[in-house]
Length: 473
Image (tube, rainbow, N blue to C red):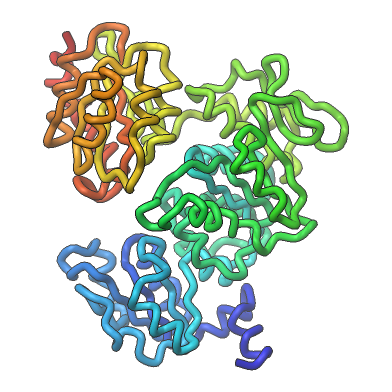
């Protein structure tokens, strides 16, 4: 491949959009990101083939409707003919980058990129990218809320629920994109170059896909690979595996810390969030004005503050926006109080570390609803953290017996439920005034639900049902 052709294929903005016109592109995986990628490519004049391992009947309506827009659609498999003549393959984050169907594609020299990379190349706006094992959705939403107080257009998208490809054509070049990005998305980036890249924390997750913690960390670290000295890398000083990534980036590193005073960074001091970036200490916001529950959310606020300061926002403006921000859905979200029992939805708690953080947010006794697909995790740390906090666990899903064994080892009682409705009924019957019923599964949702949002909505529906009001003792 000549240097000129390679430059054309990896250009950004109008040059890349022009390159895509008339190209034969195959898109693999037709969940939200894949559908958004197909729709973007069709608008740009590409000749698109789309493929998914699920049958058409199991796809979302918008995926099944793609054939009506001139897309060649293959369902129930990824056959070789789906890639015949392809000049580019776009893979959805839910499809492993080492999927066997992609091996022959790569062997033939066809470039394979992800939806995030595709959208990045089509757009021209600056990007702030946020990743980490836990807290990235809250931090992304908060950073977006802070930045909306300044004059440039702001788009909050990515793994947070709105694929970046869905807005790649209509978002202005002078705007700022705040993107939540996952390890799955970062596996397939090549030229993706965020002006600010933040890694909040790193604990074992998705080991069923990545194979080891080291491979998972390496995927996360790809967020920095194209940054230069003109860019900013935001890292958690209090988390050694995260802080260690500083040695692998060319960008200017700005640490944040809840536990330490920093020579340069954003940190907590005397009950305030403060910043010291140019030798001068600035007060940003009193900790007492943060409405989010839990110490982990203080860390999220610290990271979002770095992003806002990079954009040139004044401390007073940042303070006001932090005070107004409330929990996003499914992240330790208060749903209702019933007869003295508070119900919280933390369905986004999809790994052990996240659920531990949720438990640490409460001083009240907790009736915990947990379980699902465990992704190869060790549940012993969850059981240890539950000691003295969890009075009863109501367990659902595929790996509920593994969690029950871990809890039994530290004498925490548990019971099983076959549905979310039953789990809420059991938890309500057991909970007393002054206690908390917390959905924080520590597991993926796909054994029982479409995604964590579906799981959280099932919890919300059960809690808000009229019969729930009579369930507490």
